[in-house]
Amino acid sequence: IPVIIGNHPDLETVANQFRVPFQCLPVTAATKAAQESQVQELLRQHHVDLVVMARYMQILSGDFVDAWGGRLINIHPALLPRHGGPGMYGRRVHQAVLDAGDQESGATVHFADEAYDRGEILGQGRVPVLPGDTAENLAALVGVANGLCISFAHEDDALDHGLEERILEEFGQFEPGK
Image (cartoon, helix red, strand yellow):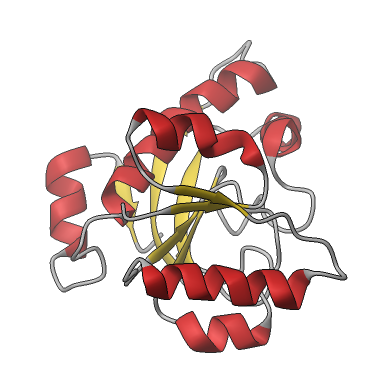
């Protein structure tokens, strides 16, 4: 991982633990174009080939998607398409899973585009929802699925022909293309 770019300072501690350069570039509606320009410049400076978005709760502009399309992956903390879209993050997404009575939850790796959680699904890491689960402990379980998705998504050849076989061999419960 050549660089971590966040719009909040939350991940700086993690980046420091792994000695990965970190840049915090806050964004508002008024600064979105300039912030995305700065992000793209940092990605170029660090020779990034694949952008993995985790905890980046912003809609990307069409210009950004056009520049990085096919190389933008998002990791969503629920099984798409069921629990995606505006507001479906953090405790809310896990409570929505519980309220719906779902039997399973997990994380979804998908191509990112200029809409919330709409891009082609590359795979899903699944965890069971058990009686008595709370949004908090479900979040912890989904965090494990997120970790599997993140560890896989940053592989150099994540989008190459061996994607499905490698996930199944290494992680078992990760289901490509769901």
